[in-house]
Length: 304
Image (tube, rainbow, N blue to C red; front, side, top):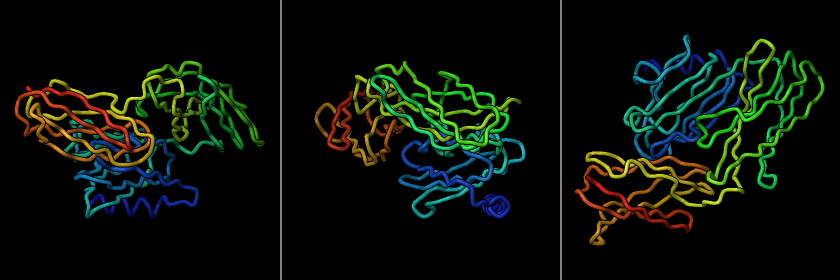
């Protein structure tokens, strides 16, 4: 297949001992992580977990996009096709998705930076009372202007929360820190990235780090269910929290107490996305019971 030979050629041309392999799990209605910050030459490795999906970017799936000159891809992700690797060779933003579930939000983003003359070192985010302490290091810098500290509540949409002046030019290790004082008390997990901006305005993105927010008051398993009520045929999209990787059991029960749906959703540490098929359910009200790692919650849904 065309995408296979393109991917192999890219590996041969761009393989590097310094390249990073980024693993993306494919399950439920989600790619995890949904956002990856990579550098030209890195490998994106998709790993099937459960379900029937694809990883697709380009003309094979309208709505996806990739930088000019980058190779398209279209690979099945099933129990018989469990891995697919793609080498990023062109900087820019790649929006990809799963062909059968793209309209239901199964999408991912790869942000690829050019190789800038900076050696980025350690990067960590930790709780400091009710604040987030962001710390990072560089081993060398050339022509750097500043660091943009960006935050997200869903690991997808990031916004700037502060800037720290860079050294400009340095051949010795430099240490930096930033304190985010506005964590809020709603989101159990927060995500951070450091964007290095040079004097010419070029940007390079750090890996994304997750913080479990100690200031969060709500510790619910289920974050949201939508739409609710649901029009037939349709699907329920859900977001849920997981303190570790595992499997969430989902049971749908009608008002007579009869179990009408039983399914399982893969769970990853942090905020998760998933979906429930309700196409076969009759009109009415149902209890949906979620169980993960000893925690159980029930939500009501209505099918119109």
